[in-house]
Length: 167
Image 1 (cartoon, rainbow, N blue to C red):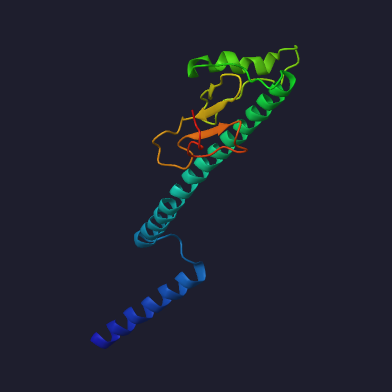
Image 2: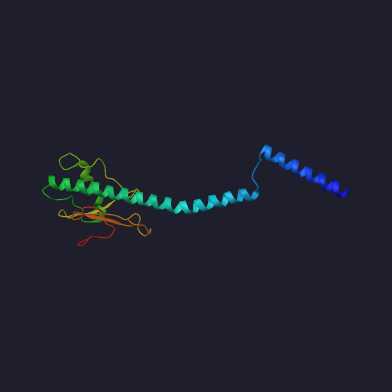
């Protein structure tokens, strides 16, 4: 009798296994689900710093390009005005001085508007008419390249440290 019972259970298990194979599996086990969640968490942990770093690099590059555009407009202004730049003896006079690039001394503007840096902050500008300095410091102390960007009439592209002779 015992052997017969074993044989019946064995046959029943084989039938169940055959039916499961024919019908396919119907779901995920808890272990499989947890494994998928862990894998997704690891991927997110790796991807997040890369994405954040890329966003900051894009902002720095955009800000650098805006500074170059302003510097080129300042150079065109100086050519039309006997080599003098818009005067701003203090950083606080920056917007009024840069506004001259929009309206232009002769009515023709050098810029459509005064751009801001990628963090929507105004650029700092200072000039006595014979030189200019342009700075953005929005990302100050952020730990990223471009914490502060400097440009003057003696540089051709923004720098992350003040150039020699910075006033």
